[in-house]
Image 1: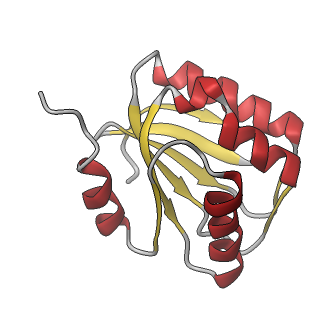
Image 2: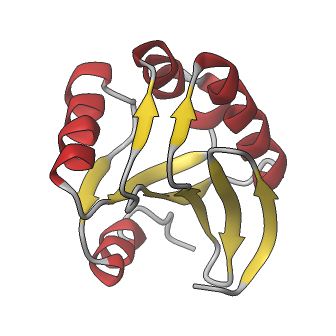
Image 3: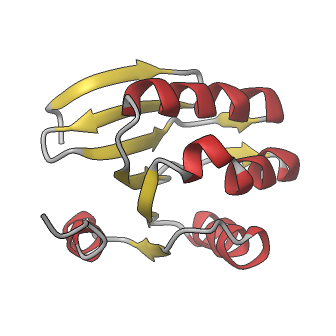
Length: 134
């Protein structure tokens, strides 16, 4: 996963396009995700996507992070972001992160298919079903 085509680093996450054309949001340890940071994520995603709709991988395999509920709701409803994602897989290996992501999917209800995974290959396989037929 070290190869990427383009990358934007923010205090909370690295956002990049990998060699398979997945858009990654790789969370950083001890991140504090506020509404202000959510708006920076939105801008970075729009910039790095270059108008192309993609499959997103949100990698929250970190020990600790804080997500403000207002920031979480903002990202779920972000029109610029939702117009750019076919579907989103969420990688998590901790109970706390999985609970937070389940809450995000069920309460905030982003308007794209989303699913939790602990295995990167399984996540990519699931995502690929949402690619448009050539």
